[in-house]
Length: 419
Image (spheres, one colour):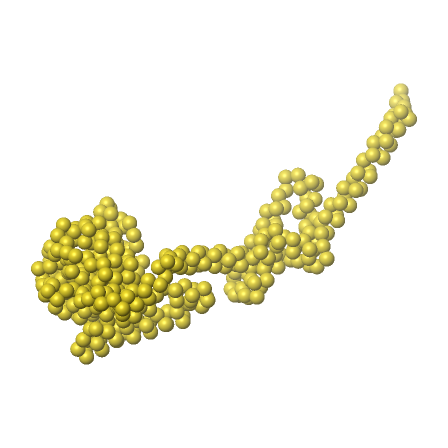
């Protein structure tokens, strides 16, 4: 028995033709769109067409991993060559990722060949440019904070000039500090002696007045203010017109010290070595104009007063002990217990930055200030460790007698010359 072949009726052919007529134009347009889109990519090649069409035709294949691997190889190859980035390339780099992609798309649309290495180079240059802008913004923020901190309100801008004028025209502003009947207290060891080295009149006034207000026996206080020649008349006029009685106070300019020739030579040697070190530091590290501006706006780096702390025994040859205050200190407690403290032969007593729990520091360690790897600085031989907590610089108690028995100043000058 023969089986007759299957015959298609016109009823089944007509719907099939209609479906084909609808699908074929859609498939043609979709294929043409994908081909044109692949040709406008940053890598107009069959591989890119595979990246775009592959996921549609080959389900389960992840071509993005291949693209990422190609980017990684290009970056590693660039790093291994170790070629420095041309500053001109960094300067001409796009400002953002959107601009970078726009540039790459524009290059591809004009049928220019843009390979992976070019893309990686442009990306690296863009990141370096953005990092440079961030660093510059941080530096400018530091500069503005510094200028705001040292800025003087407009109504006080001419304070020094007004006080200098008062010193010339007002005899009371030129009155002796301290009065002659109290001059003997300046070298009397039974009084509490406090020293300040500053050219900031208002800051010195705050430090002195807060110390007097906080003292249980202000009549036992003797202040020694050392300033420079240009500020002396204004500083003297301020404290002459605003006495701190019952405490006494002297204001002395550097030009009024009568040091022996060898002491004067020692002090000037320290100043010269420090100035040379600062100039060398700026020359080798301050390549950026904004950084040089920041250094120049820090007057303490160039003030002679900033270096005289190491010469306190020469500044006060008739004193056995002194409490040294920075001019940014506000005293809130009586300093008599500090003065009466037994220093046990130590030259200096200061406030540490350790919190007393597990040896942790609430501030910087010595390693944050001193280079322990420098063979010219035998810090370890002195029992110092980089992990040790540092101390506050605003207040110290100095035993000047113990200091004079050491060679601290001479060794400090030796280290300056070695460095």
